Image (cartoon, rainbow, N blue to C red; front, side):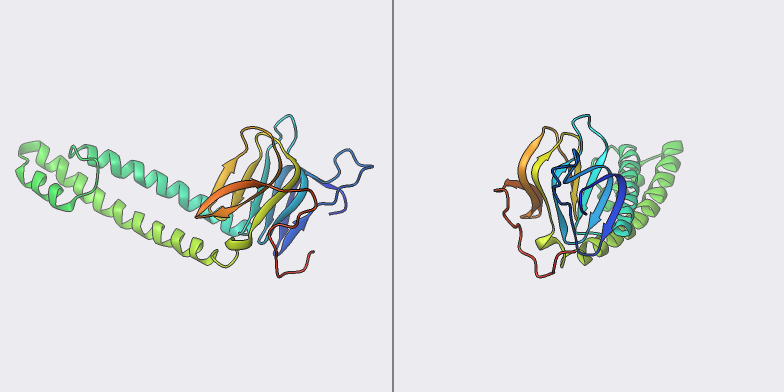
Length: 207
């Protein structure tokens, strides 16, 4: 980009770079909206002092991002449903043997309630496992892009900016200056950079 992006949706199968133009007050910035780039983003300013909703995503494309978010939401809902059913057995973790024992020991109306709960639990767990496998398949396909995926902010990332690399997401709590965000040891971290530094190296040419 020759200057800046405001409240837009940017997508790239490679990298997104935003040049710093002195004549433009917003030069070098992405403020508002979403930016998606498989290899990474290189810009000068992210977000705004007023906390405009700005999302910077690297290491995955828009479709994969939406699918991961959808799966994660369903998985979290499934976890809650499983725990509510386990509560009926006074259990905190899934143990088929213990459920069978408590079901066998139950009598009267309670036995019917627990039997129904065990049936529901089996159905939810089966669906839950399918969701986990689907998410694992997507995250596994990201393996080739994640090692070099990064978000480089050469001046300032304002508080409130959401930064995502692969399936790792963080939201900037306090303004961060001169930093690169990347994955290290399966965690999203950031490190200081010197202005002009190229991080990390990439085999692909710039856009």
